[in-house]
Structures are given as C-alpha cells and as structure tokens.
Length: 120
Image (cartoon, rainbow, N blue to C red; front, side, top):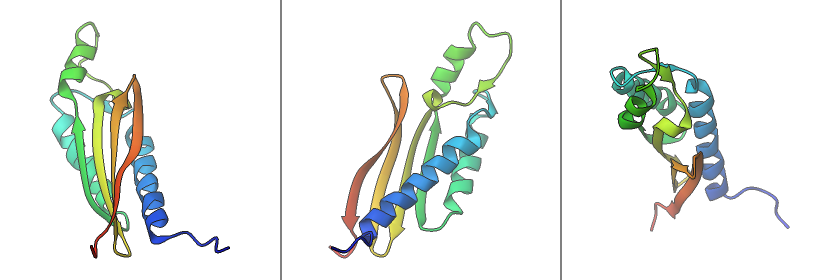
C-alpha cells in the first residue's frame, strides 16, 4: 500500500492552508461598510501570494455589517466568518481545487466544491 498523498489530495491540503491563513489572519480586524472593499482587496492579495493559489475572491457582506452596527455604539465591528463569503482556487500538478466558505446554520463552513484534472 502506497501512503503517498495524491496530487489531488495535496491540492486540497493547500486549499485548507489558504483558508486557515485567511481566516485566522483577518478574524478580529476592525471593519465597517465603508472599509469593506479595501479589506477584501487586502485579503485577496495576501492569500494570492501563497504557493499554488490561482484565484481568491473575498466578499464582505456589507448588508450584514450594517445590520450588526444598527444598535452599536461604534461605527465598526470585528470581522468574523458571518460577514464573509470566500472562494479559493488552488492549482497543483495539473489538478484544480475549488473551495468555498459560506455561512451554514450560523457557522462559517469551509468546503471543497470540486477537484478536477486540468488535462481533461
């Protein structure tokens, strides 16, 4: 039995590393509806720097931010998974992995959407 990970498994692992980095690096960052777009850009650029990362799309849900701030005394809140939708595409040795983070029953769930061979 060969215990060596397949290229697809390594690509999935790489995607997990990117999500861990994105979430834990930026969770807690002060954010407002006005600063959301610049933070999205910074998050995308930071993660795209990592090896094997082909594309990152970060959307900070400003409607949820505005709703959270309605009764707040401050004009900003802390960034958490409930304000984020993220897609990350990783390419490794001819394999492409598409991953996504979305709120699922109040929890920011990160999942593999698809794994495909680029040679097909």
